[in-house]
Image (cartoon, rainbow, N blue to C red; front, side):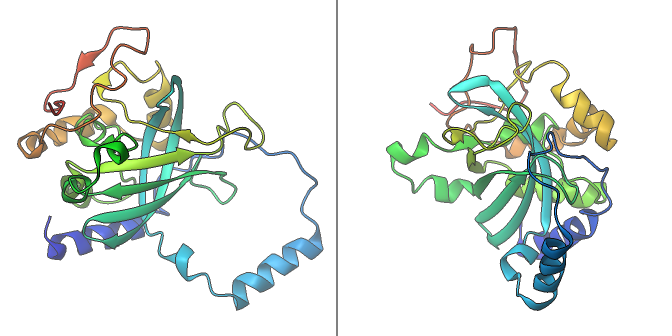
Length: 247
């Protein structure tokens, strides 16, 4: 998508971050309640210290990730992203979109042209995005439909490198090693109820988003990693129209 179309879409995404349905964190970490002194220090710091990197996280996306080596370990991922340039975004991942949401990981998103420059050994870490987009599962809540459509069109054929360090649905603290996350690439790979629970909580209609994106199918190129987790979910799955594996 040309820069002249991308900028308005991203500005609308920024405006929409506070207008989407609230989604709270999956866990409340253990620890002593915040004291008045700590609260006062945080307030003073926010007024006096620069927070430039954080203020740049102005694009909000919500999707889902299975862990590559443990596909049944799946989580809802709220992405707060910064557009570095036309071909690179960097995102902080949370388990919700409220002030007390927990930081769960990071994701880097690159365009197809950058993925093509990676050596084969590196490509194994990057999951494809076309299925997330064409299925309607990846959404940019709170912005006009036209702006979201433009945003998704600009991310067709992209790839993400994602590390999750905290599964807040299972652990009250970030325990164990980080997990490389992947993407769902066939219907039925997401656990029953996972997408539906997100939709009810946030007022999202994934099926409607999918229908609205049918015109993006001609943009789709075959992608690496589409079949990496095929057959590892223990239930029937179906192809997503427009999603093809690179040979």
